[in-house]
Length: 220
Length: 132
Image (cartoon, rainbow over all chains, first blue to last red; front, side):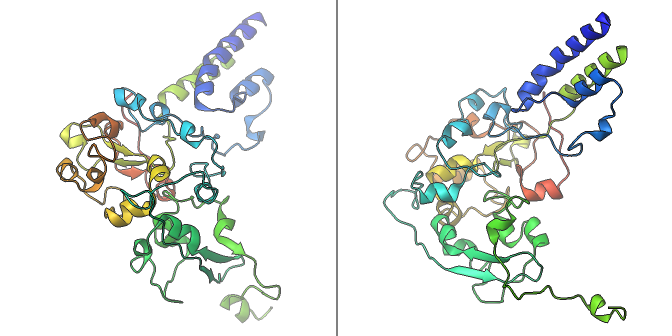
């Protein structure tokens, strides 16, 4: 029995530092619980196949793409310092960039040299009806024109004409249309962010269109 | 009891040895078109740092940066000539290019990609981190 406790202690001590570095929310490692109880199968644990919570906004030297052996890596600003006081989101940089701009917490330049030049903001919402049951898409020009110039999207990515742009989520996830920025730098396409675009509920009398197979079904 | 110790030791070993996914800042771009071949570390471009200071329009409309990681074929010759990064990193708007390691700070062998991008998560093969 003493031997077992000793081993468990050794195991706990050896795993703890690794866990502390890798995950901010230090949870007891699953293996530990399993070993302590002996007879409980780890197949019954919650969120068995979910990814471990990601450590947020790590400093460059610990982020996995900067080389810690490079002296200058340690001179670079850690994102957490810059994000202090900015509104948060549950995805991307975990910063709500658009709100930060609206609240005047950030003053990024619209011109390389002149900090007084104001962006050419256009406040026009485009509603795109969605075939599926998910809410319709409202595209707000306002936050986009606060950051970008018309020529960034028109006419190469989006033809500025009604019904001229055919798009779907598969293309967007693969980096086309909205996916040119969303999913790379602008807020990512995740299940947590669907409603940021799909924000207009369907009309009360809306019914999902039936598929051809369903219409042809003689037993229907 | 030896079993429990073995499991613990193995999990510890796995945590240290197995390649860990990079968890860099969302939007960080690694550019390695020419760096590795030239014996330099790849460039890491932090979008977050730059968007605090400039709107997307400045680089992507005024300076002509394409919306494509590695698609701009940036070289040091172009930068010294005042194109791309060199439009600001010239000692006037921002620090000049003699600070090699400030940009060339990536882990050697990291391919050109946008870290944490949806495309990368969905279709791109996961690359193994090289070095340490």
